[in-house]
Length: 138
Figure (cartoon, rainbow, N blue to C red):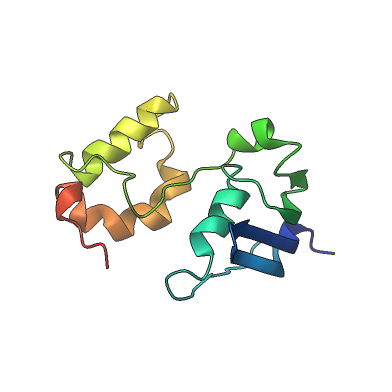
């Protein structure tokens, strides 16, 4: 039996009178490729912030690799990384310089963990010398 890697059950989050997420349910199994798409305001960023232990859901439960994102947030933060699309990179540094900087924040290097990031790194490698401020945001 395949153990779920991510389980989201009845997750809701409101910002004032505006619901960002309402009774969201899904499961991602180990080895499964799963994407979350939707228009602006659909709740994608809110969901990822909840999953990354940066925001609390108003209702519901999120489990990541068998750990509760609220109860086990300290342990999860040692295994999770979250980089939002906006305001996350130093605009005056290149992509490569940003990657190196964030690696050093976590006491590692790109070279040391290349096997873990290779699939993504090869996709961004053509842009590694480009300043982050010059990257497309669309």
